[in-house]
Amino acid sequence: MNRYDKQSGYAPNASVTSLENCQVTGKLGKDTSSILYDLVDLEQIFKVTKRTLFNWRAKGFISFVNFGGKLYMTHEMLMACIEARKEGVC
Image (cartoon, rainbow, N blue to C red):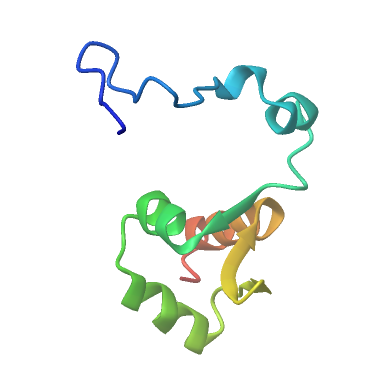
């Protein structure tokens, strides 16, 4: 029977790790070439809906990378899109 610990918020047998000690985040450092943003991230970054992201994609303002059946945008693609938005392209 699993019991939930109300004080810590975790089940007693749960494994809890901090992202700061995670091997992946430690390796990234200042190298941003391997960062991928999913649609939820992009909705928050641009403050638009998913429908708007797909409209921008259809108009050629942005593009995505299909990885494992999901759509992502690399950090470089995001920076290019932000620069284009500053210039009024999208």
